[in-house]
Length: 456
Image (cartoon, rainbow, N blue to C red; front, side):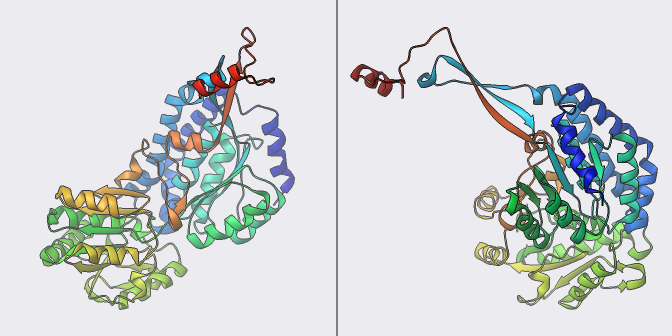
């Protein structure tokens, strides 16, 4: 790794070239054009790396990035305009405003599960905000990482954006020890997130962590069970369960448990056929290590559907488990694979006990039409985001901030929130020189104190 090239980004940023709005817009337009130009190659690369279905590759990676670029282009002028703020009487005569300024040189570290979206979506916000950027794609998806680097090299001057490849556990420490970034944005596991915070602490580098956790789906007795089963199955097996906001486990009311299981089995067969391994719509574990991590979960309950697996194909079938022991690791660890443990419940306290036995999740889902149940869920169940009567839709609305709470992450992004994340919000007060009342200056008279008490 050439650290001189990384240090050159600082000089480039300090020259002011990235602050110009026209340059930001040009860079985003070029990125959009390159994504369209290389769309088929990106889809092929993701299929090579993890057999990602074409539809999922476009929906979850390419399409969402294009949407993010279009939003930034449509609103960049508005986002960059200083915001006027009322000035209190105590500091008159003056005017107040907030200016959004770029942070400097930022580092974006992406995971392997959505290797285009989770690298380029933050990049769009960082470029829109006027920063220079270092991108670290995941080494677990080499074909996609190489394709993304080709696109970035075509689009950006290396004085503005650079890509660094290699093993994350060696590359990232080298980067952070050798250069002080102005912000680090990381998506991945809590364990790696902790190590990044430790790397950032000595130089007080701010960090955004988009992590994960055991995101639950709670099915109430008032739910439309057919829809609940279908939508939970979709979220669980999209990208073979390798999604940070996928349903991790389901808590189903005993009154609808049998119907839920029947409907779930039907939904899986409708989506992937009798043999999902032959389906072109079903992805694979990204590598043998992930296969080895998920495979033992198949033995921790009664398999209702699925359970088949093949290491050579990195294939684990869409699986549903019942009768899972409370201390099983499948109920304690983030599964990040296509295995759904189902837990029956009758009283709300049982739901609360199960959910509080794990760290706060990145997402939570409730299926049910009972308004009191919805109100209770939103008030009592903490999570980074929530969706009622569906799963994962909250990620698709760029008007909503996305991020975790507690061990599921810190910081928010999406749409304008990403622009704000990579901006310094600078407070500016312009005081008048035409009026100079001097009330705040000595000598402090009784009259001045009375005026002070009035205005404060």
